[in-house]
Image 1 (tube, helix red, strand yellow):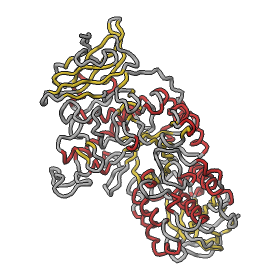
Image 2 (image 1 turned 90 degrees about the vertical axis):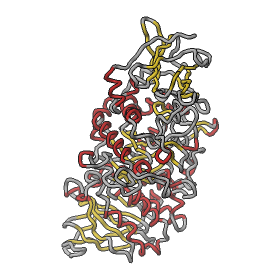
Image 3 (image 1 turned 180 degrees about the horizontal axis):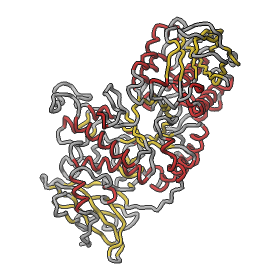
Image 4 (image 1 turned 135 degrees about the vertical axis):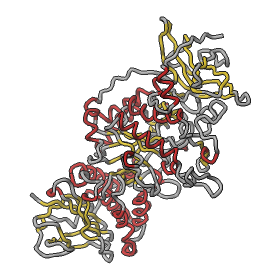
Length: 636
């Protein structure tokens, strides 16, 4: 039998914190750690399996022989099995073979804390460490300013497996190749942040990464952990933040994953009404179990600590918050107060956000939450969930519904666009046009637009122009920025060949310039979550389907005046009320020739008149292009 030497990385204090759900850096102790003990090199293993009566490490160092290397259970009822195995080392493949005291069930599990996993379809964990030398000190010192709520935050959402492929070799780009190609592209497009759909290890490509089995391992599909660090590092060196999709809402039932880990419901809630997700055929974490809370919060801290992430977009928050989410009557049990809210999940989210912001006050957590649940992005201290931002799903739904209508009908649906301003400042909202909107028959962003080819592209440019000047931060999914024609397909590369055509080039140039405008103009970001940062000029001209409004920053001189014409009929000498006298200079026009517009409706310097309009003392006449947006600033 192989030798397992008694050894521990845990102190009594660690155990107390773990049991009470307050240990937020469990990755420093659990998992596999390359160790030298009394001059002997090997690996220390630790795993939580309280229902086990035997745990052995099987791996390529013992020919996957069960019982060859049995771990020792701790004496403190923590349920932790641990031990030092001489001879194992970096690159060793392994799993835990667990004999449960629950009906002698046997499980064979990957390490929940493994830093690296085998490439699918193989499922073993791999002993790993790296001594990556970070070069992003400059970014890390100033990222509090770059990630602040009053900073420009324009996000490019990326699925690494399909952003771009080596077609001739039929393979993904690697992390190293992404560190060159993706980084240079995002920088050229002027996005401030990249959001990666889940890069934590997952077994099933069609899940897009949302069914995680290796919470502490960047997926091996694209390379080694240190190569993913290189990608993050290169983004930071180019002043680009990185947001990671994080999935604490559910996990798959794969045999090597977290489900029935030690023959019992360990990570999942034992009650199927709270522990099984019917839509996704997956298991739901037991948020009321302290050790599970510690696992999840440690995982969040891990990516911020070890991989320098700038925050998370937390997936499927609504499914966590409501006990009756996607369930019929009789399939769920009310909480202790008779309500439908999952009190344990709410408590977990608050604790997670407090832990993240306490340790890393210069990052952001963003909730993908699709209901009207209140105070998602308000501080925990006043009863909120503590997120930094929340996706504005209502805006997304109403806006896409409006833009899908032929322009002749839009005058009857003015409220679809104006409604968002009635609740825009109840949360810190991010405006998402995400991957979910361009799959499963919903068509691409361009495909949603009505009219002939010219009108479809003009509508798309108008949609983006309106989006970037609406209060809130922004997110665009890959391909949308150049008007991809077809739906997103995770199996294939984006249709980069479309950029040989002028209309697609035009959309791409427009997004590039909108990003630059958003960064340059203080009025578009300084008060993006405050009611004081927005003022309607007129939202009532439904007959012409014209909207006019003002975005405001900290200084009155920075005001930006915006006019959107939602029809293909140009509006020449269109009169709008303005806040004060002066000269207006056009700073953006979505109808320029470089965007594949007409180029015929430009405003030079428009002088205001002392002619009251829209309840204001001064007014100005402007030209608004067909299906176009124009933006103005007061000339100095």
